[in-house]
Amino acid sequence: MTTYILTAGDARIGRLVELAAGPTTVVVVGDGRTAAAVARTPGVDRVLHVEPAPGAPAETCAAAVAGLVADAAPALVLAAPRPADRVLAGAVAARLAAPVLTMVRAVEVADGGVEVTRSVFGGIAERTERVTGPAVVVTDGGTAADGGTGADGGTAPVVDAGAVPADPAVTVTATRVAERAAVDLSRAPRVVAAGRGVRRQEDLALVEGLAAALGAEVACSRPLAEGVGWLPHDRYVGVTGQHVAPELYVAAGVSGQLQHVVGARGAGTVVAINTDPGCPYFAEADYCVVGDLYEVLPALTAALAAPGPGAAS
Image (cartoon, rainbow, N blue to C red):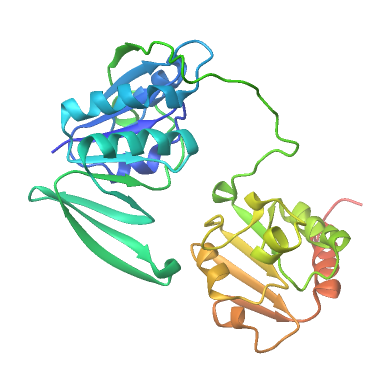
């Protein structure tokens, strides 16, 4: 039983390595620096480095990667849900005639098949499924390992699989820089989320103030991102948005509908602030504050900013 991991120039594969079974090969599409970083990841046995043609996107290597993986016939293929990685995973799945499984929480390879536990029905339930033959699993890649040598890190060999010739049918016609940098809320240790209890866009400053005092990222419920557009989609937490697992999650004015709660169910401590004592989020939260966020948030921000006992004057 072998596992192949696919990544398009991103060394954040720590969780994928944890899910792997048997000897693990990572196919890295991109520059040599990423391949070297992946080779230092504990649990990686071999790295195949595939280099795109100069100026070509990683997606142009999908057919070549599919060929490499198909020749090895692994039992399990893992990839993160990053855009280019999903293209590689799709090409491999088509070549292997294998299913693509998403929202996977656990993986086990045994008896000639792959067994996965995955979220279903929008995350409100889990189901265990068994696939006979190879399977392609797309799930959170995790973080980049620190690497090292010996017991603390890996020293996997890097094999140059060659450069992929330029595809005349695929060219980069333009590059446009995003006006606002994207945020990866799944990595944030603390998150403050705004809901429909925030009445005006300018009032998001209250949420931003508390987030700054906590060293947290700002998030929101779906209506604020997709309804009124006050925050970009990458700030939206929910079933079809970001799934977060911070140590602290503060939900300000969020009612706690199931599609939002599922996105933050991995949080360590949840603080819900709402004027409604019957707010559904109170059934999920560790700490419940019945109050107006327009009063509670400034008070919390001020308390966090106040010097502690014994502070120098």
